[in-house]
Length: 355
Ligand code: 2P0
Image (tube, rainbow, N blue to C red; front, top):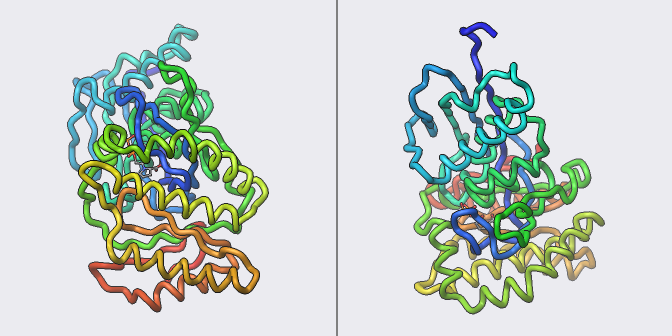
């Protein structure tokens, strides 16, 4: 290798939207959740983070730029943990086995990451961000490891990031090891298994959210009795039922569980002291519209045709099958004309139906 060799790699990762929500940690440092969760990775270009990493012996510090602005890498913080864990894998899996491999684990890295959507607006920017960071370092360090192994490291950046290492339908198994070795993401089904499934993102607001997920969920763990009921008596069964519904392409069951879990996540947020409100009046009006739309389709013997879900913010994600997407987009746009501050966009992901 000549001294002028450039060690650089770029990777990108999409956001994922949970249908069984992660909310609460049993270990805040290792980011171990109190319940398993399940998500759909949005596999088109609209909502992605793209990250370039470079290792060079002349660099004096690890440094990170987010959307062009330098972000501090705090010692012992989440970014520092992910970078040092990836360097450890490089050393163990490549350099210790091959004495001729360049000692990239001893070089500092410079990392530049871009989101093509608003950061921290309840659109899972930390999920795609940490997944892209870990994927780009894995590429830079030429690691041949499974996405599940990388998910163990992305998880320590942001819990939901572990699910963005896979496309399609993904479960984050909470695991039971106090060291976190079994708290990882696994594929439930690849994207191609259910190509008719679409997601509509209704951007109600792209403002930065009021209560961060990290602090909000720990307040819920400390104060909500409803959360204890949820993790013991609700989530385990829902994980099984929704996995089965996905494997059987049973949209009616998928929709019922997805909406019930979104409702219960927002109920435990409200059950927190002091209460947390993530949805606003527009969010609730979209729920009313989808409920009425489903009521008519159930009355016609067609079952549920749409499933709403809301994360830690007011934006709606609506899952629906391809045959119904056009009708749902028309319905939403007719009730919510594009008022700039309240309803910015209706995007069709998975390749169809933009308005
Ligand atoms: C989820 N959310 O399952 C849930 C639903 C928000 C609502 O994962 O503290 O940003 O970084 O692990 O991953 C948001 O939590 O929190 C989240 P940290 P994260 O997608």
